[in-house]
Image (cartoon, rainbow, N blue to C red; front, side, top):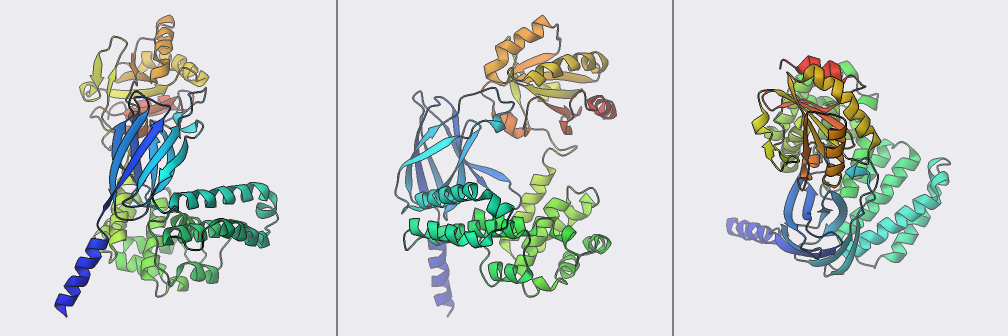
Length: 456
């Protein structure tokens, strides 16, 4: 019997062994960084780069990654991203068109990247996903008022039929789940609320598909703010439960009859809500972190142990007193300065691009701040590479005397500091840790926070 179980284990291990995916691409962006990025889970949304390279002088690249199952990833060219589904052992050839820089105020607000699959041997999985998304998006646009205003649930049968006609008779389980739960997400939105019976029919008695983005998107839609909005949970009782052990907390949540005999799904809902409650000022962060640590150590489900660890990393990223991401930047004289060299004083980081009018106004406002705080803070303005020369001229013409650096090819610094718009301000403390990220603009109480943090 033991020998038989060992054979089964070996077979299972073999089946789950990672297989290499080869990605070949051509783009309109020579000499740029290209990466394959995954979400480590769809609750924390913590990201991991699986592979990176650089396009050659003609914009071509090749990447190899090892994955164990069909996986939704993002192909990042510079800071532009496109989603794609990869199958273990498959080879893909892509054509990527990167949007040209316009006058947008953020790298994150530009027109999205265009990705076309020229060749693949994945059995048609990516094409099927593309077809589902194309039909779904067109349907929602065509019937928006009837769906969202008139609650025409009956129209969803037409959507199902349109997708079924396009898909082959037999598809991979990943595609089946993707299709089922994408349509269910729309049903959840149109109905505006989900009954307990609908939830049971949709989720219970079935495997939890942690790796399928549409399944997890539906879980997030249905159970976001569930502990706050559900009448079965009272705020004070919930806070008291958070002070107890993991068993006590989960026991309180399962008092909701919906979760009876559903320990795995109940834990998933707990983790999702703890992630959101961490940012709710009415709830104690340390209690939530304590529960997450207990999940990481005590959960019976490996996925939840890892998810709890990921949530802790994600919620504490760029938090007060967390270690600031390292950086090295060049000034107009090509001198390299690192964040490590600047420790000893606080730092005010200011991210700009020259096509942003608010950035120029912000520089003028910073001039007064610089005179008041230059003894306590090193002021640093970081310009995107395409506008650095114009920014340097502006500094010279307006007698701005603090440091100006060129972001250059270090575009990942924007991701590291999660710069979502320009201008952006971040305060670092004397020891190189985060003081405030993001900080408000000069006209919105920045001076208050500079005063508050100047001695720390």
